[in-house]
Amino acid sequence: MFKHVRFALVASLVALFVAGYAAPAVAAPSAWSFVDVGLHLENGQPLLLVSGDLPEDVPLPYEAELAVPSGTQLQWIGEILGGPPAEDPQLPYVKTTVGDMDIYKFTLTKSRTAQFEGISTGMTGTAGEIQNTTIRWTAWQDLPSVRVSQRLPRGAQVAQASDGASMQPGDETYSRYSKTVTNAKAGDVVDLTFSYTLPTSAPSAGSSQSSTNVIVTVFMGAAALLLLGIVVVSMRQKAETRSPEPVAQAAPQERPPARQQPRAKQKSRTVEEPAVEPTPRPGFLRPQSLIAGALIMVVVVAVSALSSSGSVKNGRITKFFGSTSPCSSTSLVLMPNPGVDLAEQGKDIVDAFSGYDGIGDVTLTIDTSTLDVTFCESSHTEESVRQIVEGTGLVSLAAAPIASAPATATIDPTGTRQTATVDTSSESFDPGTVILKAGLPSEIVFGQAAGCITEVVFTTLGITQPLSAGQTTVTLPALEPGTYAFACAMGHQTGSVIVQ
Image (cartoon, rainbow, N blue to C red; front, top):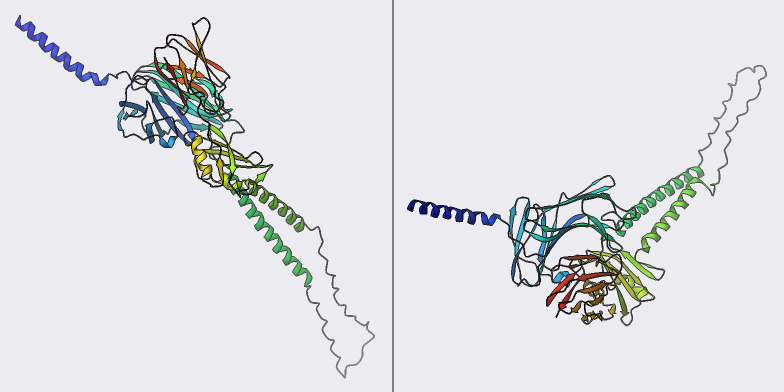
């Protein structure tokens, strides 16, 4: 009897030891409700963005983790507050490597959204005109929803598709090719491998107006040197033509000896002097003159093209600063300060954006005193653009639009459904807060997508709805009292649903 009891006790201890040893190897479910893995090409480099969203009921501070493929070069990791990117705090972290993934552990204290930004190699490549992408991402924990995507220039065509992936149109500059996996288990690999072709009109990475200016400048220098050479050669030829070779003088005849007897009659000799050809007058339509005239015209056209960048043309001043993928834009109303003439000093306002990353086109319309700026939201917000303009000291800006008051949903006469509307024409969610009644299904009508709001994501509810096709209705189930956040795909524009 005692022998059996002792055996059972030993077996129990061994089982507890094995279970305790193996427990760390079993991935615990993650508190993330949604993880987004996105690849962007920024200035020719593959920038990998991995973000996670916590449900509203998860208390802060919270110790969280994000995983990226091993070898990804960290650029930034921190909390996303939903305001200007410059105000997002960077977080201290602890990095470990498990298999082919690097895991970053950190503590969220202010926000329920975290993001990793890094440069990843080996995910993109080219084969002639075909662009190839392979994103292999391994879930390190159980996750309710994972999306893997790449942002492509608008008009790009998929040559070889990836299973389960689809193209979602963005704004006028880019589209997104993505696939979403639900209920991913620890160790599952999400693979997005596809190839595509760029639109013929799309500028190559890193191209800008400045490169065109350099080419024009080099061409002008070469043309000027060639023109100078033609002028020098023409002058030398003219000098040689006006100075003929001297005529050779005839040698004097020697007298015959005094005592020499005359011979028979001889024909007298006449010394003929060499004829001097008349100096030709230079012709007006010589080849050198034609070439020189053509080069002068080319230089004049090149100077005109070079000087047109940033100059007033058709009442506008336009300049391109080289961002390859601006995902948002803003239009500002300028109020010139006393003594400022936009036609004369507008170029200084446009040039104020020089040196800032993520700026695309800047156009100043003189007649309407408006400034249109395209920018990438990973680098700028409308507020940072306003600060750049006001920093010139030349103009003041109209007040920024005030956020709309929360909207309360309308309950239909049957009392079984409620409806609210959210506008997106300002490239933000307006209103940003919607109030619903608890226990009733609801419909929220979102307007046509604009800027980077190509889709709306309710992370805690597991709902992702594209908005680019026009007015879209998102159906929500009957909800318990609480706050449910929603955001754009990048998490820069946010809103919330308050259920009472």
